[in-house]
Image 1 (tube, helix red, strand yellow):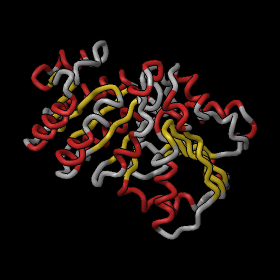
Image 2: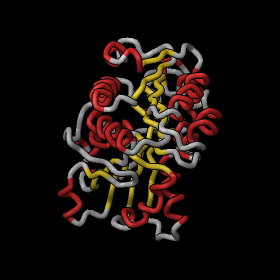
Image 3: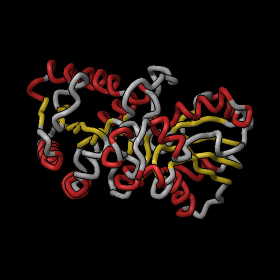
Length: 303
């Protein structure tokens, strides 16, 4: 996802001279293509993420669309006040880019876990969450964000994510994106709804387990407060929905979906959450190990 992000950002920056990239003294071996091609629009704030967010807000107020980039926990939790007051409140076109969402940096311990970031960012008015499930969705999210500049949070995986979507996939906030549109026409009444890099887990479950073969699979890469009203009609198509996220259940994606339904007084189908247990917050290990330890597996959920 990181490589797709930089490649697409460079393509867009050729067309849009107001795009700028800012890093917190990391990203090396990834961000060089942008830094080399657009040196006057690349900034290294140093290990000073709060200053990075404030500077990005100032540049955005002067007409730039700034992308701030760092390991997932640093540009979010450390910069919460700047994102809330300087960026979201003023509705400025700053995209906070986090790499290694969920437990991708799990071997570095809790300080590098990003398992409460949805909860933090989605409670800010005017903030759009972009959580792509594969490299093609990364590119599509970037195209949407550049065409619709606003405060946004782009959550990337770390590396090696497979591609499931076609290169020309198009996205809209709040709109579920089917992996196989034909499943919608078959009267399927059970769905799997993912956001972010957990799309890979859901695809694997459908391919390898008969228990999930009869579920229609969707991803939701763009969501936030403003896209809640669109959820009731989509949920009404199903009797059962399994949500999947590499985030704690509390304050996460499944909570957002349930809030959306309750706010509209809609009938709530059976919703089950595949998400992370708080136990992982005290653990150190690989992403695969911590996902299993935290319950982010289809095997433990049953059908």
